[in-house]
Image 1 (cartoon, rainbow, N blue to C red):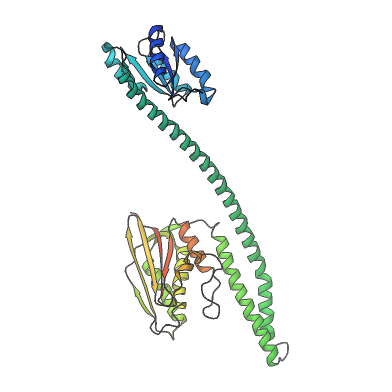
Image 2 (image 1 turned 90 degrees about the vertical axis):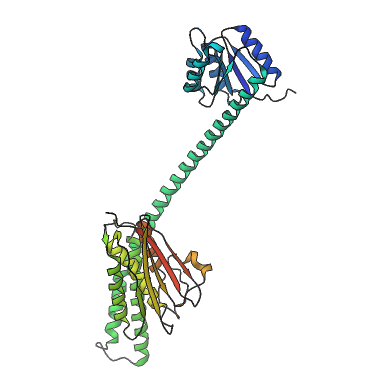
Length: 386
């Protein structure tokens, strides 16, 4: 069985004796060689070989000075047939400058006549190394193109599914509001005893229906907000984040006047954001900080921020209930809660909304916490540019 050749070489020279001698010499060194006496003959051989990838030539070794089609023209035409083909020029001592200039046209190197096997082999080794790199790069680019196509298709499918889910969520949430409002209204009307007196047991049951309806209505409102986020265009403007944070904290403190919550707000950089959506993020995060510090003797909430590298970073810290970081990856999943209803109220939608808004702005949001030691929520937004 014939051993696998080191490479397939096409040798081109208008002097047949040179072609025969070089073919024999390199064949003895382990290469598979073919010869051609002119440029057109070589191109015909290249086209035939290109039809069968396994038979393709690795290196074209051509004389620089040939009648009709010289080595430079042959090399340019050959690389149109096979862009990965490596070209070497053969030249005499008198045309070395021309050969060097020819390398600018795509030749990798040149070989001086008369031939010496000890000088030819290193040049061929370099040429084959380049050939391997070209083929590996071409294969890598093809795999990358295929993967990109797959990812683009998957992304289109995901966008379609998201739109369908948003439309479904919006439809369900919207359609639920009318019967819920009716249920709440009738339950409240009956509890008022305007239609007639009720005993204590009946009042208790109707009160449960009324509260349950109100909870469902609040959840429906949050679902509507969540589903609208993908459709609502961003209206970016310069937002004074410090002023907005202080307004929200003032409202939260007024809602629970009996609590003595220590608030620390550092200087906060302005952001380039949708004002209404950013307020929603801050309301969700600051409300959580108030909620999860209710069982702490000395509740503390801190807000600070910084600007660097075209990005604003904001952090909200509290010393409340905290959570186990092993559950952090599910923290921003819609309807996922880390605390029971008995401990803290909520539906597990607020953080999902906050994440979606931040990511629509091109930012990131994450959390750090420990059970019983509070939580830090940090998010980024584009900085205001002058």
